[in-house]
Length: 112
Length: 113
Image 1: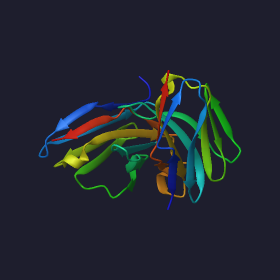
Image 2: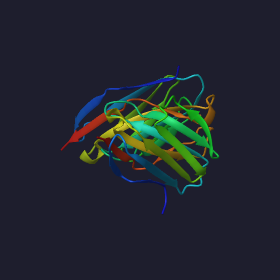
Image 3: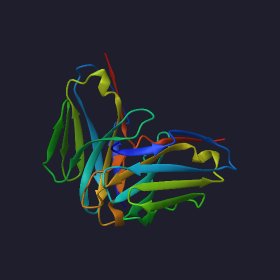
C-alpha cells in the first residue's frame, strides 16, 4: 500500500534559521512527488513537482530535492511569511485517475 | 477568472438538510477530484472524475453524492450528514495522469449541526 510520511509534524524556527522538512514515501511506481503550501482555512497552493531521484527545484527561499525513498524541502533564511503547513504528495499512475496520496503535513512557524 | 473556484466558502447545515457544493475549473483540465480535510489528518481522497466519468470512489458513504456534468464542473450533493462530516472539502483539477500536478480550490468549510 502506498504511504507518505512527513516529519516533523511541527517545526518552530527563528527568522533566518534554515532547516529542512522531510517526506518519506513508499509507492509502487512513482509518477511524481509534489510539494504544496497550505495557509489556515485555504486550499493547498502548488509549489513543486519532482519526478526522478537527483532532481532539484527552487523557488525563492525554498528548495526541494528527491531521492528514491524521500524528499526534502529546504528552507533557507525563512521569514515569518513562510509560516504555513507544507504538504507532500505522491502520484502513482498504476491507479486509475492518477490520484494524489498526501502526507499529514508539517506545520511550520517562523518567529521574528 | 482563473484557477479552481469553490462555492460556497462556508456552509452550516442541519443533519436533515440537503445542500450542494460546487466546483468550477478554468484550467482546461480533464480530471477533477473531491478531497476531505479533517483536523490533524491527511487529505482524504473521496472521488475522482476523468473526462466526466467517475474513476474512483474511495469507499465514501452514500450520503455524499458527486456529479460531474462536464469537465469543468463538479458538484458534491450532501444529505442526512452527521456531525463527524464537518470538515474542509477541497476540489482539485489536473491534466489527468502521467505525473501532472493538481490545483486546488479554496475549499468549503462545512459544519454539520
